[in-house]
Length: 307
Image (cartoon, rainbow, N blue to C red; front, side, top):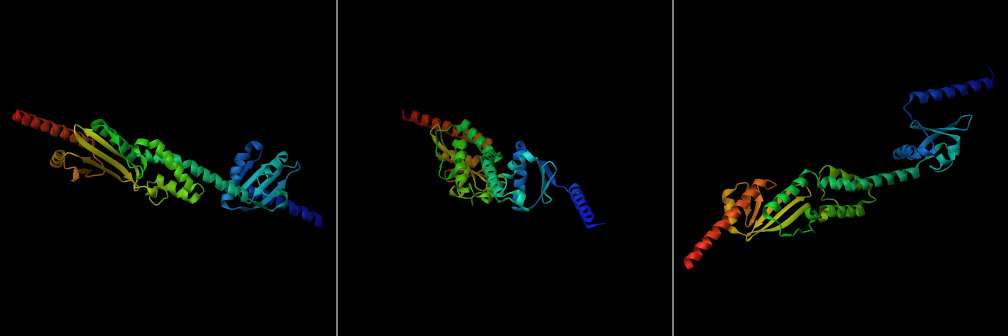
């Protein structure tokens, strides 16, 4: 066998080796046409996230069509007429390089990830603020209003990230503040989103640490001549707290005597658990009615004595 025949045979063996190697690997494969630019770009961006420099091999058939192989990770078939469009994704001339430079696509991929994280933040906040414990607090407010009415809302907005009375507007405002701080911080956004979705404490994050509570409300009510202030909040550890201020000592005394599920400190009542029950609101309403009725009777009796 002469040298020419030997070289030809070796070349054929190498071609067959490459074909066999490709057939036995799990290399991802895709065809490039302008309509598929987004899909191909996405696959190459995924490679860029793994590393920015890749080995490159470009084979060409008799018609000038290209077979681009990026190590053992991706094979892209590129028709001759689309070769120039394909190369626009990359830095440098692919025909003259033995490796692929994905630095520009890496930066683009990172910006895409940042955009996705920023886009995920607002829905995550809405989902958190409508989770069961927040919805339960909203329900409690409605029950309170139906029983005692609301004469004025006096929430301390400086201490509450999102107020019950302006929930939607405040979530939007909170999102804007968080984005201004974490807009370019991929790691910060990832940790924030994970903690929001996992109900982990948020007080360590900028913006949240400016507040004492994630969510809350303070309501002033008046029933007959008795003033009541109901306060309910969810703190940065997702724990619920509630309290009721009552101006009438006699009502407080009756509650203390009749109901064991609440604690009294001065003129303020606290639930033994995190929340007041609906039954307690009903009992408190009835106690107030009874006390006021008894006071009216006594006033009438006193009035009759003085006549």
